[in-house]
Image (cartoon, rainbow, N blue to C red; front, side, top):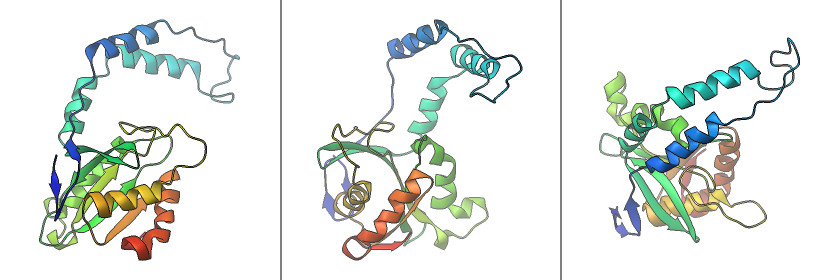
Length: 205
């Protein structure tokens, strides 16, 4: 259990470590792919180009280094917590300086938290990249339910992501004010945080 601010919630540090048997099974299934026929000279007119897809699968089987990706992801502070019965995975990178603005960033679809990893240091530690320390953010990057390492909600209807994020930021992490950003589907989720503005302390979207 990890303490954040003046609160002590059930927040568990998380390290990604996929069993080798799972990786071996994935490579085996990729190697057994039954390829479809393709219309001559169709390129990308009817969907993914077959030659490109075969090249991509060959890369996954022979060249892609998952362990290197695990090491990169684990270089960030990953956590798990439970909100409304769902296990939620998130990265929490505290910003430099005395008063960084908390910023929750929501990924889109099809995507994952991994898309945001390169910008986390830029936002949390701008002084390392030619910026000013006083412009830093506390960066929170969660995995939406059903994505990455977060649980899926096996019920009909939309998942109230904005409410989950409000609880994550206020009840779990102890922030009294924060900003929200998202792209694609994540933009819609961030936009719905406007409804949380007065009740949950959202300063900007």
